[in-house]
Image 1 (spheres, rainbow, N blue to C red):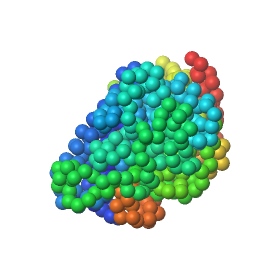
Image 2: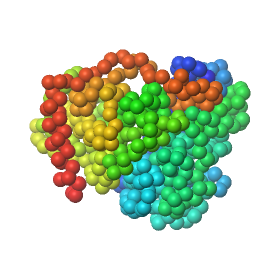
Image 3: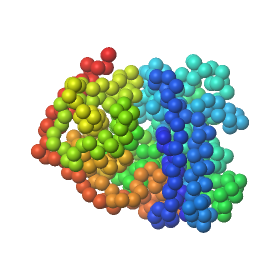
Image 4: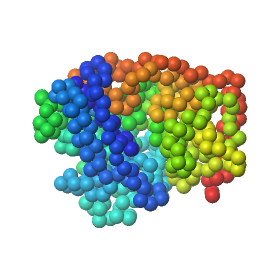
Length: 482
């Protein structure tokens, strides 16, 4: 048996599979994501451990014999978080997460330093790890002085599982300390960020072994034999493993808390100025590019809180198929934006709000605004020379037929919808556990899912959505300075 653990922003998902990747059992646990100040987003790493204990307890109760046969674990996690531990491995403060933008000034300074773009292949975004440590040095110097190791969120969970300080290239590519082309820590980038190599974890490829589960934990859950933990991956690379996205031109669009349009790359070809992310893949010798928006289904969650209806209720107000773009426009910059704007200060808005607008109108505008933001990502990817002929549709928002058709028509790309079953980051993590424990070829393990349907763009409406997208684009300069 093989276990995939996906450490998300709001919860931990566990999938237990056999050696073929067939799911045998699942479990889920949630935790809080406090926002103590504007622009701050934190979590207590102890909550991740509690969640992991909870899902392992649930798996033991549901499938004790299968859990006992566990041989490999893969980890997926939200990227960029700064989990800081002292020399004894004790956590020094809450983890600053990927959507924490307090270090915007530090990010701008580091981004302006010589060779940073050439080394890392990326803009230094405020949500990345390195500027968080610069902020810490300035605002919490006593804590900064005690930092012995900086761990990404899933790698703190690995520390608890194995006792080892290890990370992988795909997750570490989002720190602004990694030479993404060389797939190793950069001494120059570390020095620019006032950090040292000994404060970094060791690096392994995501599909290779990255520690072994501690005997005390194996005994606690009745697991017999050695359990190999994979190098594993950041959440989007893990999702690409779950979706079988490795070849040039393969990609997916994810409508999760954030939004992602990802394209696999067989060569390293960054274009930092585009605000497109260029990161290492979870397997050796591969990379990927992606456009990222900071709020996708999070926008719907926000609207849900304001109108007192669940996200499912709001989506249920919409028709099954699109009938043209709304006159109301929503700008989804609730937490700032990454691709293509790289702005921590811009904020969202409704434009054209009328006294007669209903919750259904607001919901349609939110769906369209997120879709237009992902169209911005497609334009940015195209500008780097990356082409996508079709993409898999993933994430909670992709369950909505209206949202899928809106997105397909906005992108003017067919969306392939996987058949029922697991195919996301948790499955990708389990697949990494399989390759690390068995030595199997990743290409044989990480195959694409069966496709249940293909959503074609509505050809009669593509130009109408393109025109609405162009009007949407024109609003960003007007609102940026407000």
